[in-house]
Length: 357
Image (tube, rainbow, N blue to C red):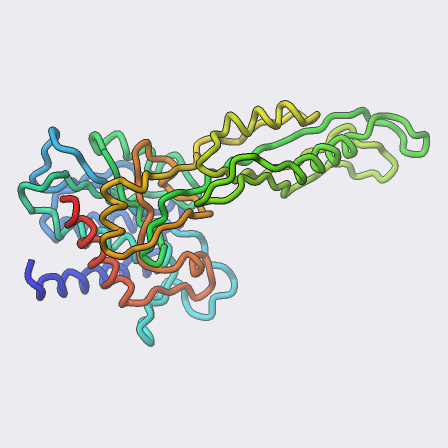
C-alpha cells in the first residue's frame, strides 16, 4: 500500500469505530455491531462468515498447509456507569480524543486490527495465513464468544489479542477462578449455647485463606492470591446459631500454577465444602523468545504481566495481548481513546507482523 492508502485505511478505521460507538453492543446483545462489522468487510470486498455474533475472515490467499496467526478483539461492551457526563452512544471527537462507550475497551484495538487485516488481506507469499475474528461476550467470558468461533478458524499457531495495553506487550495474564464455599454446622438456640456455629467454621477457614501464601512467585505476575469477597449465613434471626454459612473466594493465579494445584491446597486445609464455578479462565503466558515477542522487542516495545483477564485465557495457542489505549480507562465514565493512539496502533500492528510474515 502507498502512504496515501494507509492514511485512508486509518481514517476508515476511525470512522468504523464511531459507527460502533453509536450502536449499543452489550454482552449477548451484539447483533447490530456484528452487522456493522460484516457490512464493513462486504464494502471492502472481503468475504466473511458469521457464527453467533462473531465475525471472522481469512486472507485472500489462505493456504491450509501454512501456519496461521489470529488477529482478535471483541465488540461487546459493559453497560455505561452512572458517572457519564456525555451520551455514551454519541461518538464525540474533541481535543484529539474520541469519546464513547467501548472506544478504549476495546474498540480502538478492534478497528486497528481490522485495518491491519485489510493491509495484509491480498498479500501473497506470506509465511503465515492471517485470520481475523471479532468476538462477542468477552466482557462476561461467555460461551458464545471466542470459544464458539475458534473451531471455524482452522489450525491457529499463535495470535494477537487486542486489548488496551498502551501498545506494550502483555506476555502473561492471571487466571481467574471463582469458588463457592459452604461451611456446615448445626442449628441451635444462641441463649443455650446449642448447635455448632457454621459461621465460626467459615471464619476459621477464611483466616487460613487470608494468611496463606503460595510458594511460587512469578517475575511477571507476582503471587497467586486468594481473596474472600462475599459471606452470608442467610440467617435472619439473631438468636439462632447458623447451620450454614456461604462465602466466595476470588482466586487470581499466576502462570506458575494450574487450578488443580489451587484446589488441592484448599482441599487439604479447609473444613468447608467448595466448588469452582468455572475453570475456563486459566493463567497464560507466551515465551519471551516467541517470534511475536522478538518482533515487539525489535520495535522497542516493553513487556509485562497483566493482572486482568481476556479472551487470551480461552485460546489453546500462544497469544500476545497488545493494543492501543489504556486499561486504566476501561469501564470508566466518559471513556475515550486518543485518535493518535488508533493511528499508532495500526502502524505498530503492521510493523510487528512485517517482522514475521
